[in-house]
Amino acid sequence: MSSAGPSTSYNCISLGLWPDWWRKASSQAAEEAELQSVHANGCWHLGEDISPLVEKIDDPNMANDKDLLQVVRLLDDACREAGFFYVKGHGIAEPLMKEVRDVTHKFFQLPYEEKLKIKMTPQNGYRGYQRLGENITNGKPDMQEAIDLIAEKKKRHSIMRLLNLVNMEILPHQWKELICDLSRKIMQGIALALGGPVDAFEGRTAGDPFWVCRLIGYPVSTDILEEHRTDTGCGAHTDYGLLTLVNQDDDICALEVKNQSGEWIYAKPIPGTFVCNIGDMLKVWSNGIYQPTLHRVVNNSPRYRVSVAFFYESNFDAAIEPVEFCRERTGGVAKYEKVVYGEHLIKKVLNNFIK
Ligand SMILES: O=C(O)CCC(=O)C(=O)O
Image 1 (cartoon, helix red, strand yellow):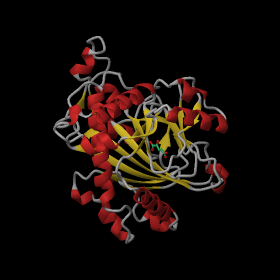
Image 2 (cartoon, protein in one colour; image 1 turned 180 degrees about the horizontal axis):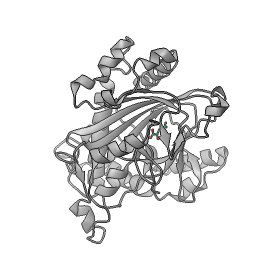
Image 3 (cartoon, protein in one colour; image 1 turned 90 degrees about the vertical axis):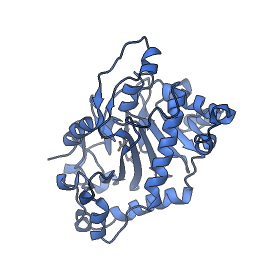
């Protein structure tokens, strides 16, 4: 989940370092040439194959696996230099990724009254449908509608029960399991990349990860009444958890990431990949070795865009603080105070919706 403004969560802040190739990309053509040359150099930022990690991370001999260790090194580069990266070879079939986006499009095409049947309320734990402009970032309504599916802690707030009211299962059943498992594996890789044990995020840190799956629809701006329109589908923010995976429409550029020169550049869709970015909890935990990166969404295209973002978080009640082995690598002093993830989340969520 992300956070707004100089704070953090559904919308937030903090800049990652960007490699030169990323900084230079300005025109579409220059961008493409640049991306290709970086890809040719085997740069992991552009969808290097993470299958060695996905397939072998649970193998007791994984520490000797050269291919896996190479993915870990590239993951370290990506987290240090950009805070944003694409993954392919992740094991989730492209048709399933498309099906998830298709059902999301289908839901948002329903009449407004139908969508309201699963309206988000405090009583259902802030799960459900949010109308256009209901989510706010940096004090401004976002030009998006969305559905939040959130990890269940109390069955009576089940979003699935609500969804039955419109006789519709929003996402294929296996989606949550697959994406949660993939997130856990990438986090295992990140633990190794930071020089920690593979299970560093297990147990009290993220052994029972809280998660939010957010289905987001960004209308064409000219379809929005002028008096309701703002210029962003999702205002500039960083995400407030550990890791976010975004399954975005293949053919619309709208997700923008701020580079070190202060320019907004597209995280262009690359079919079959997830765009991943790290969040605020990882910054605290790593004592700033990895920094989340400011991003936003602007849909200037003539088409309705959807994305399905999976926010993989720590345990809801985890007290996140700089871990010792990261402190040792950064001068021995904790740069960030302890944060209880769930408290942080609630504070942000309450600030992020129009009352
Ligand atoms: O729609 C996207 O591509 C990203 C959405 C996002 O950044 C967010 O919801 O935090």
